[in-house]
Image (cartoon, rainbow, N blue to C red; front, side, top):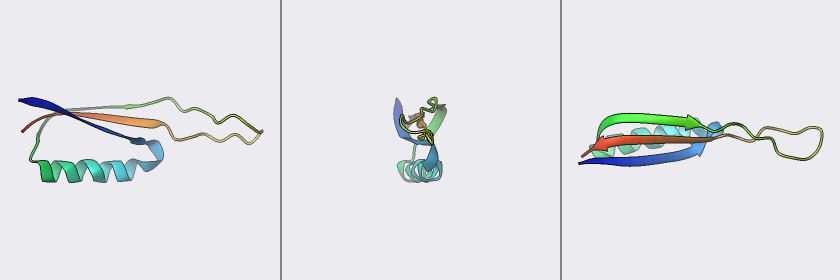
Length: 66
């Protein structure tokens, strides 16, 4: 039976997200069918002249079978 696992993080934490996904893959025994990802557009924080960009949301959807 096919199932879905969703991982969500922010762009500045991609290494931790990668580690989380790899850990899940190694412990779950899942057979991955497809992985789809999306990075949301960056948004600026409102305020002073020195506005900085906040991290964009990252979403990964893993379609798998057990």
